[in-house]
Image (cartoon, rainbow, N blue to C red; front, side, top):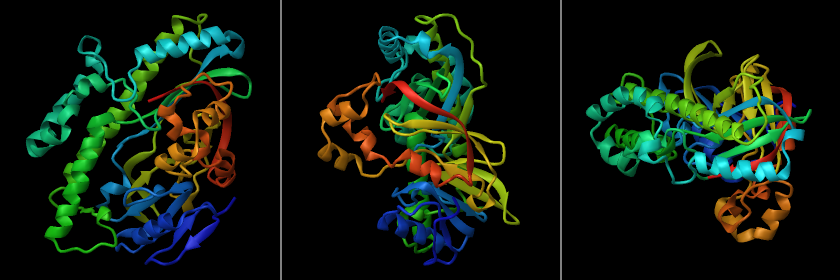
Length: 398
């Protein structure tokens, strides 16, 4: 499907790949389109919805500037998935319940982390020198990290919110591992710190914005390189964190399933990040907040909710989207609204056949709180090609 609508209330247009976009999200997109350094147009993916400052599901190309809120606070958040040589025949209900329990023990979720004696120190320590250099230059980061100063113990952990670990079956009943996570508490602390630093810079320079959360760092300013260094660090940490969890999950499965092999190289992709790219005759800083890169041939992962299908895709390299696509279904209603509107009975009904939590603590992640993933996929047929369709049989939430 082509672009569904174009918003023209800013300095440049906003090209939108959906008809469903709430008024507040439209305002956020129009605000971004007024900024003098935003290049050519703003792209809004089919799962676009309201965020802090910048919408989730937005792709923004900036000339010699970066808006930290257009990256978000879960820097480097993304997906990893790989296919195994196992099939549905290897997954009876008893085994699946055992696997659910084993992974839940081996991979800390929510606010939990590895105990010090089980920390993945060898994977975390290579990140320490650059982190220490950042804190020497920005001593306040030590306070910002606070309880997250034990970042070594969070390597190989899931986190909470919409992060998850799933065991899935594809269209040929082959088994996949798929998970969603980011840079954990330390990435969040870095994001918050630099967003606030950008706000203070705007005040110091008397720059007035349509939304204070759109504060930015121009190239050449005091904090621009510090921010790009911090984002680079958090993106690499998030990438390594997903790989570490994947390895823990594979080890957990090996304890309870027949011998198997990994039959595809893992697809590991960010959907909250910044990259320096070339678009529409200019070298620009592209922020994807709730969007993945989909250059021609790029492999990506687009998950639905915990009761819906997910997709392994190949990018088509659509220039109008800045070579991007949606990162998932996207929320339809807020977490608070979901908790008020739905019950545990609703959750059980919508996740029937899936081994997962069905208690009050995850009602905010109920499938009905999300947009229909089939509609999202139909709205981006010009952005990606579907390679595999996955359906979860086990889902572990943070």
